[in-house]
Structures are given as C-alpha cells and as structure tokens.
Amino acid sequence: MVEATLALRLRIYGRVQGVWYRAWSAEQAVQLGLDGWVRNRSDGTVEVVVRGSGPAVREMVRRCGEGPVAARVSRVDESVEGGPVEPGFRKLPTA
Image (cartoon, rainbow, N blue to C red; front, side):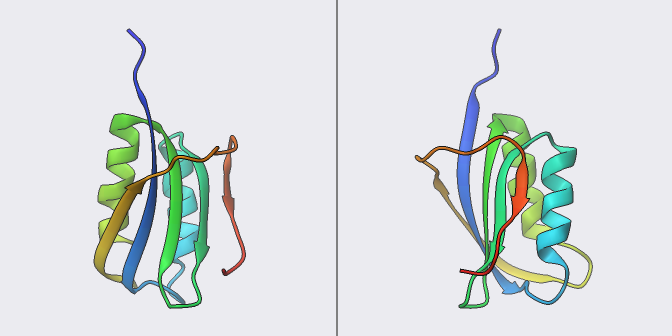
C-alpha cells in the first residue's frame, strides 16, 4: 500500500525570528524526510512549505508548534499547498 503524500504551507507566529527557527526547522524536515523550504517573513513570522508522507508532515506541524528552545510559538496556521514542491529542503531569503 502506498502512503498518501501531503503538502502544507505553515505560518508560524510568536518569537520565531532571531532564535534559529529556520535552521532548526530545516533540520527537522530533513530528519522526517520532507521536501520543501523555510523562510522568514518581513512581518516577523516564519513560513514553511513541507511535502511528504501524511504522518511525517503532521509530525512536522507538531514540532513547528513547539519550535527550538529559544522560540516562543503562539500559533501555527496551515493550509494545503497546491503548487509544486521541489525535492530536498532549502532555507530561502526573507520575503
């Protein structure tokens, strides 16, 4: 049986910039075998796009709600990502 692929766009709110959140989330995504990217947003949030098996993507959402030690996550919004997601995981510049 083939596991369904899920792609989500996450927006993480709180104290999530200047606390190594991008690097941490890239490490988490690689550990979980996910494709996608992460970037800071000019409004102080972090945006993450992840694609992979449903359980791995859901685990990434859970981890993003906790964040690295110095982060204080107040909210994670998620939406289905409809566009293509390139293989691998990248850190992108601030948008």
